[in-house]
Image (tube, rainbow, N blue to C red):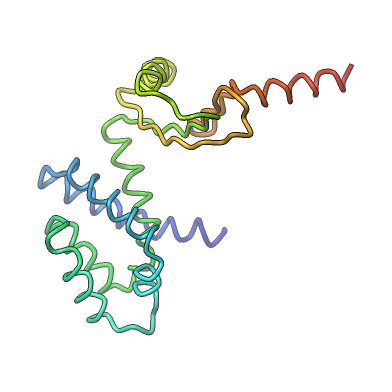
Length: 184
């Protein structure tokens, strides 16, 4: 068993508890927005992440910082959850807990997360058309697009839905042609 899978096994009950509390308070959508805000903040601020992950910094300092930073920006439920993670010395697992929480929240609202790589930025109407096609393909009520730009695709896009990959890119078609021609 890899250390990453152990980390996710530890993160799972915390994510489930947070989702359960959010459902009880009827703030799942609000929590999701706040969790995404928190995730973005942690990915942008390595200082904050390193501070929270450092086992040599005492819990009271971490809790004081979290209260000071997030009292006006996060719901009481989420802030108390963060403080519990600090108390239980699990704040270093916040990244995996966030990932698991979002996975569970998307599953709850029947949302499928699709990673899209394109050669150029998609317009709003292209995104909407793609979402409608993906809803039909995946039988999901909602689609969450995670867009990224990859100029090596030349044109088209690559969509990743779970373990399924849909490659409509020009570079993918060229790769397939090269493979076919080399096998002839």
